[in-house]
Image (tube, rainbow, N blue to C red; front, top):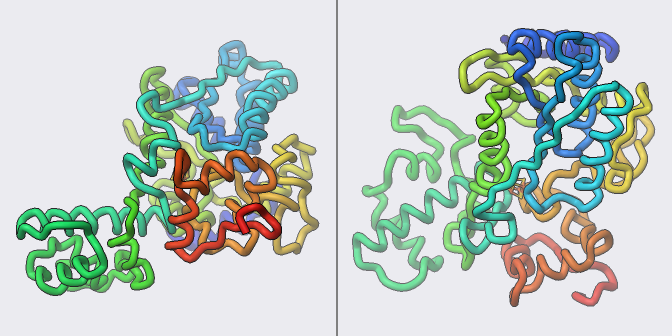
Length: 366
Ligand code: SF4
C-alpha cells in the first residue's frame, strides 16, 4: 500500500471507517475459519476493537455458538482498575452480543515486571533507544574483556573505548554512533542521540526486552497453543514503525505465522473517542476519566493512555505530573515501591539520572 492510499482511507468519514473495519474483520474471520483471537489490553483502542469483533462474531451463524477467544497480556504492571475492567467488559460483551468469550490471561511464568529492572534492565526513553543502549553496553563489555580493562563501565571507560577501540566497532555499533550504514547511506533514525550517551555508562542496566518477555511472547505462546491468529487495535497514526507495518500489509495479512489483522490501522485516535460516544460504549472511566469535548488538547480528563503503569518509555516527554507522579495519587503503595531502592525498583535513582521528575508536590518525598 502506498502512503497516498493510507491517507485516502484515513480521510474516510467515521461511519465508513467503522463499516470498512467490520468488513475487514469479517474477511479475516471467514478466511481463517474462525481460528482468531482478539488482543485486549483494557485500553480504549482494544475496547473498541473487541466491541466490533463481537458484533461481527455474533452475526455469524457458523461461529456464534463457539466462544470468541480474547487474550489479555497479564504483565502485573497494569492499573488495578484496568485489570478489573478487562473481566467486566468481557462479561458485558457476552451479555450484549449473546456470545461466549474465552478470556485468556497470558503470563510469563518465569519472570514478571518487578524482576525486569534487576535482571534484564530498565525500559527507558523508547524501545529504539533502549535497544541501541543495550547493544552498545554489550559491545563495550566485550571490548573490556578482550583488552583486560577492569572495573565498572564508567563514563571515563566508555569514552576511552569509543575513541581507542573505534576500529573494532561492528557495523551496527558504528551506525548507532554515526547514523551511517555500512553501505555509506545516512540513516538518522538509527543514530543514538547524544543526550542519551549517558545511558551507555549508567549505573543501571537498560533494555528493550521487557515488552517481548512479559507481553508479546506470552500472548504468542497462548495463541500458538490454540492455533489462533490475532486481531490487534494498532493504528498507523500511532508511530512511524506502525505506519510502515500497516503500509506493508494493509488491514489483513495472511502470511503463515505472520498472519495478522489490524482492522483499525487507518483510524485516528479521535475516531476511537467518536466510537465511544456514538455507541455509548463502556470504557475504563476510573483510569481515563471523561471524554473531553472535540478540539481539546487531551482526549480524556485523566490518563490519555493506559498500558503499563510503571513503564518509563516516553515518560521524559510527559508534562508534570507525569505517569509516575500521578501514580502517587492513584496507587501510593505502588509508587513508594517503585521509587525506593531498598526492596523496591529504584526508580528514584533512575529518574534522577534521566532528568525526569518523580517527586510529588507536597508529597513525603519532597
Ligand atoms: S510497555 Fe513498558 S513496562 Fe510494559 S511490557 Fe512494554 S516495556 Fe515493559
